[in-house]
Length: 113
Image (cartoon, rainbow, N blue to C red; front, side, top):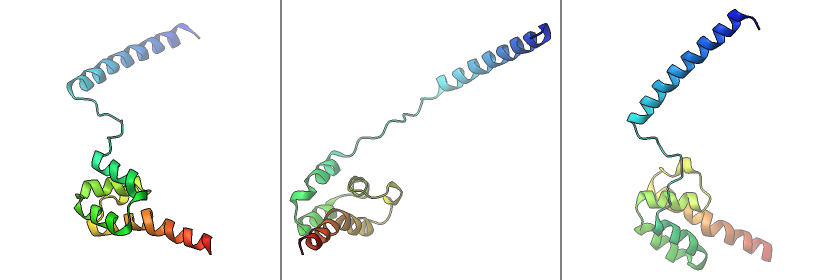
């Protein structure tokens, strides 16, 4: 490496340092977004854990009392797609019922026969 190449590299390093300082200043003015997952609503988490012990009618009654965000959390918790959690409330309830109860009970009856 000759002297002119070294000078070019030193110039690039100085520019990088200036840019780094500008980026740090910009970041310092605004709060950094957290990339951590949000905690699931405690009510939704409790329902997900108790799904196995509830009957179909009890589960449907509990789902009808939840708000849309909680239903979305339950839907994702039972294996639904997070992209679908914003669908209408009736759709979410129907899919949660299918994923949590009807699908597994249908498979159980097939295996037993």
